[in-house]
Amino acid sequence: MPKHIEFVKMHGAGNDFVVMDGRAADFPLAEILQRIPELCHRRTGIGADGALILRPSDRSDYTMHYLNADGSEAGMCGNGARCLARFATGLGLPDTLQFHVNDLLYRAEVFKHYVSVHFPVEPVPVTMEIDGEVWYQINTGTEHVVAIDPKFLKAPKRLFREKGRLIRNRIDLFPSGTNVNFASTLEQNRLQLVTFERGVEDLTLACGTGAIATAIARCHTNTLENPEDSGPTVKEHHMQIDCPGGPLEVSFSVARDRVQSIYKNIILHGPAVRVYEGQFIL
Image 1 (cartoon, rainbow, N blue to C red):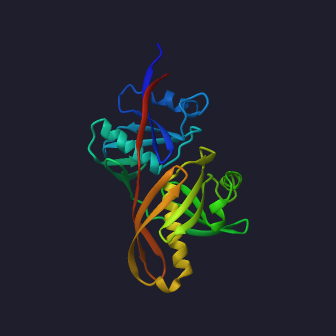
Image 2: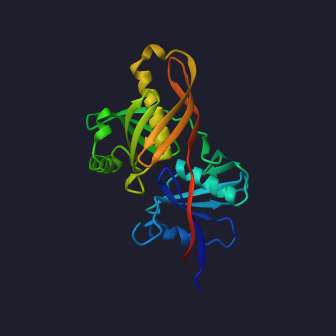
Image 3: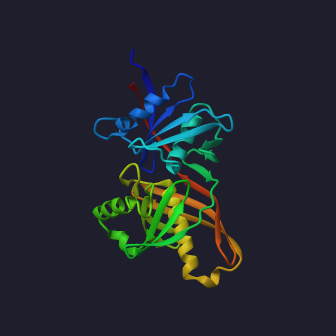
């Protein structure tokens, strides 16, 4: 007999997801995982950048299981984490939550108009050159590279799509692939961002972990450009990242000594919206 699976369609600044409650003992996880590409297909399925499954945890409020639109495992997804936190409160969980992604414990705070997720990571930017351009490799729970250049302000989507696909598939540099971020500085603490996402294999309207990587890359470039400011200090930063689907905000602190900068206390803020509810037949 066919099984009907309930889902909620959600998005965070246009980064959209099929969201499911997978805590029941009879939840058919294996079968659903096989159906993810079909469910996320924008012509013949529900349509989404990825799928989120709320799974039970004996260490926190829940475990977040995220898969890309192509069915591949994605590690962390910032916008997805914010959407799943709002979804969890709709199931009766509290407005302040703890959840696991793999072995890392995250914290979320759900407010009326936005959701904040605290990241337990301390990324270390690595400067690299790709085809004559400077990029910053930054892992914010998943792999990213970021380039910041004013020429991206008015560049066509075709450039982002073509160059993003090329760099994402540079297995000589990134054996597991990477997410590719094209950023431009608008103001001191505001940047424009377009992301080519691995697993979606296209541009997305927003990327939360990419927004974090971009904010850290901007702070890192400022340190490189102003070495006189790189003495021992601790500073708080708050940046707005304008994505095609809407703005995200990133806050973090950076502790500098004369050897390195440590980025920590990272929080991603932004909308998490329920679009509609439905069922699909398994």
